[in-house]
Image (cartoon, rainbow, N blue to C red):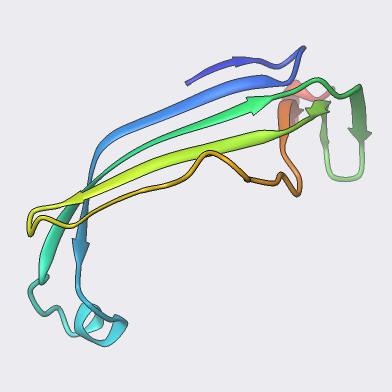
Length: 109
């Protein structure tokens, strides 16, 4: 992960996350063997660009700054049974995306 909290930009990259596919919730809860094993790769980009907003809440003992802006997510899952899925980066809409620099507890004072 890398982040530039002053500009509200950050990148998170995740690779080689093992995801067992149990077909449904009941099979998972009953500890049945998975029907396939998938591997996840994912990249999330926060692009920032909004104004810096300062938050200071003594009652909750937290403070910091955040920057809003658009974000995008790309992910791919490949299964050992030959199935694969790749997200489409185009047409994504950001509802809310923020990058924070936060202080709490003894660091808030």
